[in-house]
Length: 284
Image (cartoon, rainbow, N blue to C red):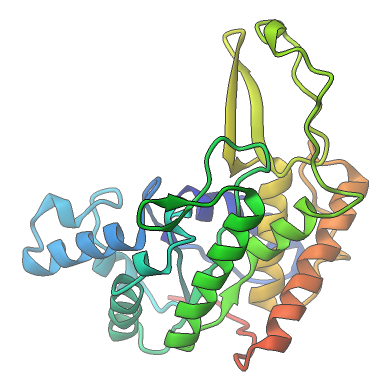
């Protein structure tokens, strides 16, 4: 995974799901918090110029070339930083450069785009959609980022892991979407009580030393679970509906819905793409 905290979120529960499903899985991580495609490429380029340059080894003292050269990888994923995801201009030339770099080092690997998700509907900011312009809502962020991911994926002829679509299907559902708690008194936010965040896929509000903290970007346990279900469905080409694993914090009924959404979203994406599912077995 050439990614950031969003790839970490989306793969948090993937090992448990894969084990229960009887699939061998080895995950390699080239992740930097908040990292864009450009930043990953800049580090790779620095390592090519000088293998001893620390700037070329941002992944725990290793370069991208070192990580990609450890064994034979069936699938390598790339993704844009969420804050830039709605602006297609930020993807190039870096998506293509990373794609070609991966294929040079792992010619038999399937390079895949991981479509990141829109921020929570009550976020105070959304992704860039053009230079100097940002999305005005979660819907616009999803629409613009989805278009950007698909545009570049089509140019590179690579498949997409549709996490952004799965998140939005839940976030826009009449029954399952998160809704703001309008009864919560934010003037009393120093207390131990939190707003009602039922069905939220994002971290949202939390208490930090009796102060109200807010993270509308990253996935909570339910969001991490949905992310992993989408990855499972994509990687192994099978429904996760019969899998029993779920994080303790996720309500059983909500978990059941998330499994259905993950599988139906991946099937829909597959139908619209000429790319076939890959069924990898990671091995040295």
